[in-house]
Length: 102
Image (cartoon, rainbow, N blue to C red):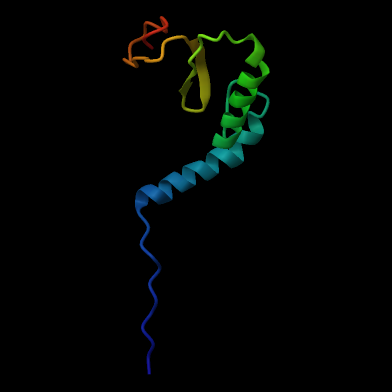
């Protein structure tokens, strides 16, 4: 008697492409660009580095500081700032950070 074939679970194209791009980025570029500053290839490393940076400066940070704002373009940090306002507006302009809007 013939057994029915088991079909593999369906996977979306988006998931396959995303996984492929992640593998390419981690394997090929991480080794080549390891020494670049302000560039991260792994989320966990990005988080740990920024938390470490804040903790290093903890005693020097003014009590009025509410947040550290980090601006990334893909995996490169292009700007950072300490915000004194509890509410920030992200408006997509090229004006920079004035303490209230970025």
